[in-house]
Every structure is written in structure tokens, then in C-alpha cells.
Image 1 (cartoon, helix red, strand yellow):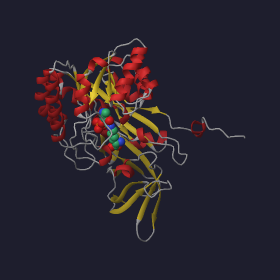
Image 2 (image 1 turned 180 degrees about the vertical axis):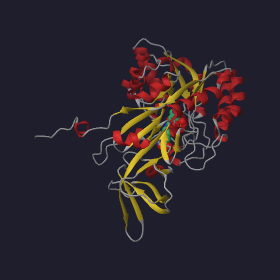
Image 3 (image 1 turned 120 degrees about the vertical axis):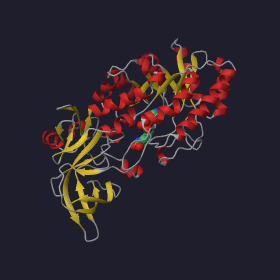
Length: 416
Ligand code: LLP
């Protein structure tokens, strides 16, 4: 599954001791395994080989430049959601013809930049947005391609904040409006609306919701085709769940086995946008125990990482396994693993049985590669941490830890 393993009682990333990296880089930091990352990409590619999909890595899950470049070098495209991500994808030398752009609120500047870049297609999330893309493309004298992001109104069993395919959510366009758009497609002279996109949510363990949504959308495409609408692309989004604790998610192969027969029949070009599946288990967060405190009621392990570095436990009640990077035989006790930040929600685990740890011990917060660093912030004037990648027996810093000066850039002491 991943390349973070204990050898002789010490946690390794591929062939490098995590403690050795901590000694050089300091803590906290994110650590990525090149092999796990690329293996996961290749797993999807292999499972779906029969339809030769364009796999656009969802950069929002992890925007590290070296990490993206590693995937681009394997032929990955990129799913971007802002002009910042688009520019970063270009820096990583992604082929613009392999870039798709989703976002419920694309600005004029973003649309113009994407048109200038010559991306493969816009995933359009509302009718006014489609009009705006058409207007801007017209002004620029360009012709662009677009897929309509359909909101298929299917429930997906995952955390409320990361389910997207229901009409209670802001995402995509309902089927009725989509039908109208396709029927009136001539109105949009500068947009070739030749694709359909869905993304029903994230960390979805079972295959059923995907199959249901894909079936729904494929029968909708059949209906459109019967009206003479030409469709070329079907983008099935991301959302594949991974193992954090004891989930039994479908494998890429199971998923492919279930949906390939449906996808193949359509003859469409298939696009996928996995994020977490590729990078989730390819990264860990390494943090140091600062203090251990017992208030008579509870035991707290206070670490140097905080919710600003990894917000998932606080935001989604997400479970991340936590292991001391040196195995010991000492007894376990129940502790809260907490950060130094002034919020009660600043925790990585609550009431977690953990081997007894002491000041200076290092802990690995597992499965932190997706939406970890990407969602980190400078809250409490804390610099964002370093990111390190291991390949075989080498490790390299792929993003420097921020300095105080980095944080002060742009600050102005006002004089009235
Ligand atoms: N495509 C679109 C249009 C998306 O909105 C997303 C994720 C993806 C693809 C990639 O989904 P994935 O394969 O990674 O599940 N911060 C949350 C997850 C938010 C997901 C947002 N959209 C978390 O930490 O769980």
C-alpha cells in the first residue's frame, strides 16, 4: 500500500530513516515517498488502460511542485481550480492540453488566463459562467472547449463537508438546466460544449455511488446524443477513498472492473481527477513531542505541529493513525495528541491509545499526503513547514520551511 515501514524498530520512508531526515530538516515536516506516489498513479493508469484515460491529478490535494512534476513526467494531466494552480501546473511543465479547470467561481482574469494558456477544457459550473466564458473567448477571438459539470443529485456516503453531488450543494448544474444548455448550445458560438463532468465527493469508500452517478450521466448522454448533440469527453472526477484506519475501500482495479463496461460502451474520451488516491498514503507528517502533561483527568501529548499544519482532524473529525517513529515495547495509554495553538480544536487525536512517549520523541501522523500541507496556514504566525521527498535511498527538501521574513512579506505598518 505504501512505503513507510518499520525495519528493526525504526520507521523508514523507502530506504531512508525518518529520524535521519528529522535530524537534518528539523520538525515538523511533511515527508513524501516518490515510489508510493508514482505507484498509485500507475495503478489507476493500469486498471483503466482499456479506455486509456487522461488522468488529471487534482492539484488541490497536494500542490507541491516537485510532486506534481513527478506525476507530469509520467504523463499525468492536472485538474486545477484557480489561476494559481494553473500557473503552478505550467511551471511543472504540464501539457496545457492535459489541463482541466473546475471551480464554482472562476473570475474574468482566470478565464482569460486559461484561454490564453490553451487548456483542454473548462468544467463549467453554472449558466452565467458559461456565458462569461463565451463572452471572453469571443473578445479574445478564440474558440474553447467546455464540459458541463452535472450535479447528478446522488448521495455519497462521506463527510458532509466533502459530498458534492447533491442538489443541496453549490456544485455543478442540475440535469434540467444542463439539458437546456445543450439544446441552446448554438448561443455559445465561442464554446464547443462537448463534454460532461461529474465529481460526487471525496473519500468515498464504496463503488456504488460512483457506479450510480456514472450510469445516470451516461443515460443522460445517450438522451443528448439522440437529439444530435455531439459529446466527446466524459470526466468522471475524483473521490476514490483510501485507508486511514480500517476502511476497506474498493481498489482501483475493482472500481475499473465495475465501471469500464459502462465507459467503454460510450466510446467517449475518459478523464479522471484523482487526488487523495494518488497522494494520500504517499505522505506523512512528522512532529516532535514537546511536553507530556497530566492534569489528573487526562493525559496530553503536546507536539510541535498544530492544526495550522494539518487541519483534517479538526475540520472533518478525520482519523489519522499516529505512530512513534521508534517502536518500543512500553505500555499504551490513552492520550490526546494536541498542538500548541490556542484552540481546543487543535488536536491530531483524542483519547487515542498510544505507547508512552517522552519529550523529544518523534511521531508520524500517517496518511497525510492529501489535503495536509495543501490546507495548511500561517495561523498564530506559524511558518508553513518543510516538505521532503524520498526516492530510494535519497531524500531532498522539496519545499523550504517558511521563515519569519516570508511571513512578514507584504505587511505594512500604517502611518496615517
Ligand atoms: N475533482 C474535483 C472537481 C474536486 O472538487 C475534487 C476534490 C477532486 C477532483 C479530487 O478529489 P479526491 O480524489 O482527492 O477525493 N479537504 C478535504 C477534501 C476536499 C475535496 C475537494 N474536492 C479533505 O481533506 O478530506
